Every structure is written in C-alpha cells, then in structure tokens.
Length: 584
Image (cartoon, rainbow, N blue to C red; front, side, top):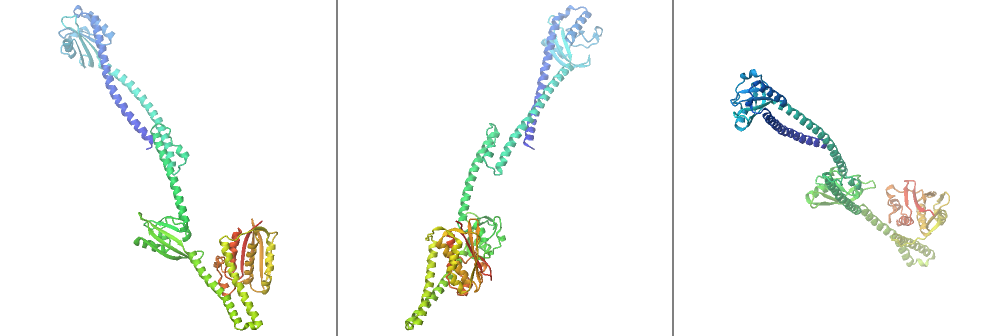
C-alpha cells in the first residue's frame, strides 16, 4: 500500500471510530437532555394548569370540569387527568364523563403515589386505558385539602419522534463532517504523498551516486516539519558523503598513480583466487586485457597458480618464469605474499626481459668488441714483430707491414671515437647548432664522398627527390647520420647493385629512406639493430667490419634533432632504413 493509501486508511479509521464514539455519546446525552427538557415542559404545564383550574373542590358539575379539562388539554397538547384523594378519576381529557366509572382506581399509580408523598411524581409506562406507552407527570392540588392530583401525560412516541428528528440532524452533521474529512484526508494524503515523492526522488538520485550540488539542494531542507528535518539530515549526510568520496577518489587516484608508476605489476587475489585489484602494468606484463573478477584458474598461467597454492601454505613464494609474448618470450620475476590482517594474496610482477636482453647485449658487446679489438691488435703486433725481426731492411715488405699497422690502428681509433661520441650523445654533452640545411645538397655531398667506396663494388646510387627539401638540423650530426647509413648500405649491398635514396615531405618533417639490395634483416632483429653493441647474425657471420655502434649513434642523433628512425625488413631483398628531420 502506498504512503497516501496508508495515511488515508489511518486517518479514516481514526475518524470513523471518533465519529461513532461521538454519535453514541451524543445520542445518550441528547436523549437524556431531551427527556429532561420534556419533563421540565410538562412540569411547567402542570403548574400552569394547576393555577388555571383552581381548587378541584369548587367544581360540582363534572361536565363543566370536563370542558375545562378538554380546553387545557388542547392548549397544552397533552392528556390531562384529574384524580381525587381517593384515587378516583373525576375528569379525563381522553374519556367521556359517562365512561369515568369504568376506569380503574388510580391511587396505586406510581406517579400519583409519588405526587401525594412528594408533591409531584413521574412515570413512564404502558397505559391500559388508551393502550399506548405514556410519559406521566402528576402534581398535587395544594388548594385541595383532600390532596387531589392533577396528572399530565404525553405519548412516549412523541419523545421518540423528537429524538429521531434530533438523531437525523446529528447523523446529517456527522455525514457532512465525514465527507469533509474524507476530502480533507485525500487532499492531505496527496499533499503528503507529493512531499514524500519529492523527497524520494532526491534520495533516489543520491542513492544512485548523484552527489552533485544541484541534487543536494533539491532536498526540501527549508520545510519546518518532519520532512524538512529528514531532508536536512540527508543533506548533511550527503555533503559529508560527497566529501568522503572526493577524498577517497583522490587517495585512490594517488594510490593508483603510485602503483602504476612503480614499474611493477600488482595483482590482488582473494582467498578463492579471484582478482579483486590490479594495476595497468600487470596487464602490460601479462599481456591480458582485463583481470578484475577473473579467477586464477582462468588466467591459464601455471606458474601463477603454483605460486598461489604455495603462498597459501607458506605465506609467500617467489619464482622466475617465462611466457610467450607477441614480441618474443618474456621473462618475469614474480613474488606472491599473504596480506597481513586480510585473507588476500598480493602478486608482484617484474618484467626481467629488458634486463636479460641488456645482459645478453652486454655479453655480445664484450664478445664482439673483444673480437674486433683482437683482430687489429693482433695484426699490429704481428706486423710490428715482423718488422723488428728484419723486415725493415726490405723496403717493399716494410711498406706493406707498415700500411697494415696504419689500417688497423685507424680501425681502433674509429671504434674508440664511436664509443666516445655515443657516450656524449647519451649524456647530453654533445652541443647542436641548428641551421637551415638543403637536405638534397647534403645527401649529394655525402654520396660523392662515398663514391670511391661504392666504386669498389660497382654500386650505383638512385635518387628520388620531389621539390625542395630545406630542414632544420646540425650539419655535423646530419652528416654523421648519412655517413653511417650510406656506408652500411654500401657495405651490405651485393656487388653490381644500386642503393636508392628517397625524400618525401610528411607534415612538418622530411622523411629520408635508404634502400639497399643486401641479404636484409630478420623481422625480430629490426627492433634490436639500433641498440648499442648489437650486430646482426649475418653481419657477424660475414665478418663485416664494425662494432655495432653506428646505428645506435644514428638513433640518438636523430632523437636529439627531434625526429624518428626505423627500418623496414625486406627479407632477401635488402633493407630499408629511414629517418625524419624537421622542415625549416
């Protein structure tokens, strides 16, 4: 039942009970009051009749007494009976004189007895004479020494008629009051219902999480009744809740930022193994789209399930495991601990892949650099020993050995220079002087400097330029980038082939592409060739000169100039290296 219905039912129930009680009380009190009023009226009429008749003893003629009695009865609209001291009826307004002798003696009538004893008397009883219930009033005739009695009587149905008329008026009043109360109840119910609905709508918005200032202000706080009191309490609670939620959101964001900036994946499991929290880094490490509400059985990583089971038994467990990744296998160092004070388990993930790759590159660099250093050092040492053993005396041999020593010392110098340049670029020690440079002229000058190297393998250059190409760059840095890329393209291209150089405008940059016709680069190596100390397997197998530093230098120089660099593998069709530089 609605609030309006309940209020209406309660109001009408109370009102109905009140009206019924009021009707019963009114009927009783009004009936008694009406009867008292009739008795008083009869008493007054009796006294008037007593005065009008005078002493009964003066009437010697019953007919004249009868006439007087009838006149008074008609005037008072009541039955008048005159009784002598012996109880004999000497006159009655309802009985003829000739029939008086047939009437019973009235000396034992209750009202007559009371009147003779007390001066007046009352009685309500059924009249055998006129066969009707009557209300009697008797009064003693004080002028008569024989204590004669004057009696007045009215039919009791006169009282009933008056009472019914009074009841009809009371009932009509009560019905009007009831109808008015019903209408008032409906109006009050509707008014109360609208107030409650207004409050309910505001509370519903608050319940749904709408804690905007406008919503809180919509509460009827200005009312002075109970609804206003409830609204003010809700408003106060809502403001406090909003402040708490704002604080919690701020703390949650701060906590989330801290967890996301840790560089470690965090996953929280409940005791059933269902994920209740995780940060973004955990998704990146595990390469999973979503973990919230996912059970550990559905993650499909056996090491994590093993750690969860072991942590349940031992409190914590750590291990390193490998997973398949889109970019190759990943190595993950993980530890699971039991949270203090709760039945939750916290998994901490750390991606060790880069560290392993760096360690692998370090080992490769040491091996490559050792190999690269060993060869020129061995050549220098061998040629020096040969010269000391007597080759100096042979000018032809001495010149050949000296040339070998010079060539290998230049290789050593180049390697050391590259290491120093790379270190300066990485640590920001290298200063750049940005100028407007004609990119086509710069490429042409570098190509011309490489002509002798290209001629040794009969390699031609093809140019694909469109329009002017003015860029903003450092002369030395741009030349070093072109030198490294063009030298590599010549070094790794097949003899009697061509190297293609293309320039295209892309937004605020110019993109330079250099394509050779060598054996190409494997796709998985395309992400590694710009790492320092890295050399492809084919480069190592073919014993090409180089330390694996050239492309690392290219990458850092281009990044410092605000551009990008990359490679597009073309297996068995050569490689396509590209870089971008800002237009002037």
